[in-house]
Length: 167
Image (cartoon, one colour):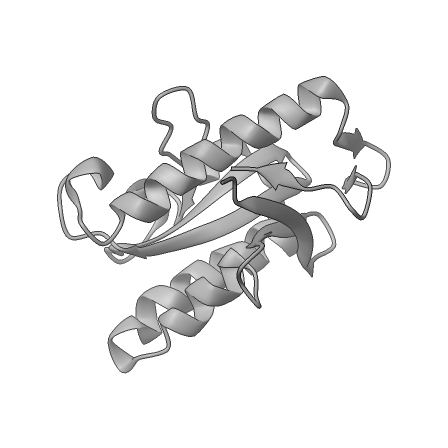
């Protein structure tokens, strides 16, 4: 039996519209689940860093490719926050997976604390990493099929409200 997902608006800033994914059996989006699952004190600094980069990219600089960690796997095109270490003042092992559609559109997924050298080897990150790559493949196909379109002028996605993506 298939699980279905829908695209939902997450946060709109001046330069970037962020979306997220809501799975059919969930009451909130993957992004909100990520935020809610990382409220403990140990995540305060890394979560603040990720949130500040989401805001900075959204309001000030736009979603340029260089500000996203490449996390693609098996044909997926996942990326991750925070940006690569050359843009950071501190080390951050918390990962938020996402899909950068273009300079104005990003889809936020979920994530966790990375405790191994690679995402594939990390028990906490691996499920989020694999789901992010699966979702990017599905969304890419929906874009190619015309089920999802990009409004370049508005910097938003256009899709039917009842669009469901089979996982």
